[in-house]
Image (cartoon, one colour):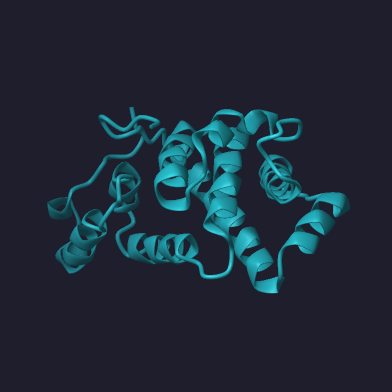
Length: 181
């Protein structure tokens, strides 16, 4: 059970209701519980959501690499909510093959992953697991990505590390019916 209430629009001060309702109706958004928990800080919820939306719609980083990195964050943090929601988004919105998701934990040895994908996954795992990223790992993503792409990778991994550090301590649960596709 979540440690904070899942709020509804009528539970927040009137000046935040319209924005909250808008956040709940974003097309394609299935991650509703996180928004309902974030509504406990109604002034910050839309700003949080705006940054997350911007990172998911970034223009420089390949969406497939982004989603592989986000799945790695979910794995490294043990956050089921993150892992399941981005498992589905990876396939539906970024074209990540299901086989890659199934074998993500074996990314270093699986022939399903190329050197660039391995570098991005390794970066996400290191940044999540110890915050520090080795020079070797950073050099590998630096070789693969231009400045804009690299900055987006850094921001995406950092933001979703914040997300899992909200989800896990608050024990935010998957929404009913949300399962890995």
